[in-house]
Structure formats: structure tokens, C-alpha cells
Length: 308
Ligand SMILES: [Fe+2]
Image (cartoon, rainbow, N blue to C red):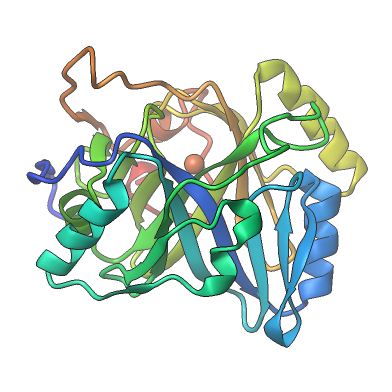
């Protein structure tokens, strides 16, 4: 590990500027768009909304905003997006990012469809080179009515692998306006919030940039049994969990998509009430039983400090 033993991340001045901002959508490059789309229809009920240029597909639930773009190419995270419902939040965000010297461009018109409320949006690049979208509120008709066992409640958070957690925390807190909810005490993992959820974005030291995993919400613990049985029926292996994370207190299972992306199903994430209580970011020991309270079983793909 490159990080020193004890690291305390301070919250820059802009931290807390976003308090009504949620994950919105995620875009993947995948070698076989049709196979990936078929998998996501089968696994989580996402269906094609639109065709994209070059054989890509845009997937969603209901008739509102999309959840996922599948683009042809070598497996990679292409972009991810956040919906900024903070009043004036998008304008203030653009000012902060430009002020800190970050590039900001207009969001591609295909994301700003009249049918989803003609939102405004911007695109920026984080220190790892990830493309990040921020846009104003959109219609989400049909998005939050989960059919238990057949589709999750919503797309909820993204966790990025990185070679430099400190630089990513500085960007997402100091530039974008997220807050720090929890960190590993050695600085190798930080969980960031932009609304009442414990985290909408997390950053973990993996030595390289890219997606670590992303997560959908289930409603409750009872749903996990149905989901584990149904995934098994669909010949999709549960590869991690069930477990409960210390940071966030959320229940989880994981499975993989055909391109190798790690997908989490989660419930009961801790809520933060910044308008009623003052929080100090907590520092968890980097041990297996911090990341998984239930006995410390860890993800097979991640060799970060909690497993040492
Ligand atoms: Fe997660």
C-alpha cells in the first residue's frame, strides 16, 4: 500500500455544498452490447429505452430518465452521472469546478431530452480521468416502484478504484461538494455523501483508476432471499455476501455482469441528517470485520488494506 498508516481526510470548504444530489446513471463500454443488455434485462429488469450511435443501447426502468448506457468497446467504465436537485446547485457547482481549474463542458444533447424534463447538465473529468456528468432534476416516472424480487428500487451508489484516494477526495469534496461520512483510518477507503444516504460515491485504493463496483438498492432484508434465489435460478452466482458493511451499515450481496463489472444489491444504508446533527467523519480500522461486520469475508477481487 502506498498510503501511510494514519490518514485523516479534512473536509475542504466546499464540502457539504451538495445535499440533494443522487446518483443518476452509469455508462459502460462492453464487448457485446446485446449480451450485456440481455443480462441486465434478466438480472435487474432494465429494458432498452433508446438506441445510441455505433450500436449502443440506453437502458432504464419505466418511462423516465435512463439508468445505464451500454457502448461497444473493450470493457471499461465510460462515464457516470449525478442528478443535482440542490436549488442553484448546478450553477454553483460549475463555478466551483471552473474556479478550481477543472474543465467543464456542456452535457451532450442526447442526455437533455425534453421527454425527461429538458434538464441542464455539465461534464467534467475527475483527477483519475473519469468522465463525470452532473445534471438538473429529471422525470423518473416508474423508477421508484420496485417489483420485489424482479427489479431493484433504484441505482444508488458508485465506488471508484484509484491510485490516489486523497486526490479524489479533494476533488469530490473540495470541487464537487460531497462530504466525508467515513474513511478507513489508513486513508485507503473513503465514503462520500451528497444527500441523506451515507454514501452516493466511495473511493478505494486499488492502485489503478476504474470502477470497483456500483450498487442498486433493495427495499429490505427479506428481499435478499428472493434475489439470491432468483439470481441462482438465472445462473448468476452470488460472489460476495450476504454481509453487512460497517461503514454505511448496509446489507449487501454482489454478483458480476458479463463484462466483469461487480454489481451490489444493498439495503438499509445509514441516513445522515446534516440539518439536525453535526457529524465528524469516522475512521474505521482497516480490518476485514470493518468492511464486512458479519465475520469479515471479503471481496475476492479487491486486495486493499482491510484484508491485510
Ligand atoms: Fe458499495
